[in-house]
Length: 114
Image (cartoon, rainbow, N blue to C red; front, side, top):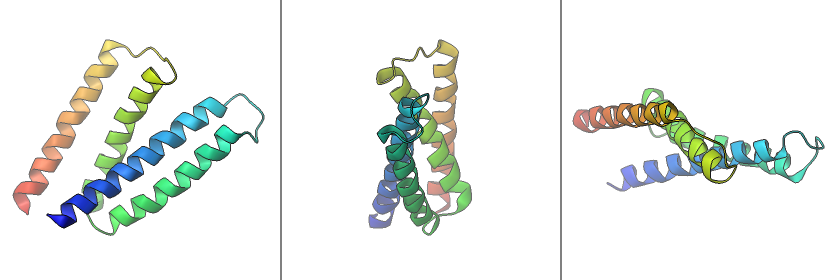
């Protein structure tokens, strides 16, 4: 149980830092190449990579990669809509829902094999 909690926290930290990095890079794009947004985005990505490597040390790549990438895509889309005020179309939300169902299937398969 403790190992699952650590795994979840590592994944959520990696996803959060990756999403932060994406958002900061978007905010810094089109500006002076050395601005705080870009530097913050690069730093967030570096930290995200460190946490991702920790995740890989605890779980198979076939589990870690879909979770980190899928949850990052979902979180980044939400940040784009909320923070950047980007318009997200209905079909995009449906796609994200399908991703969640895929991640749920992966989690169920992992849980049933443990």
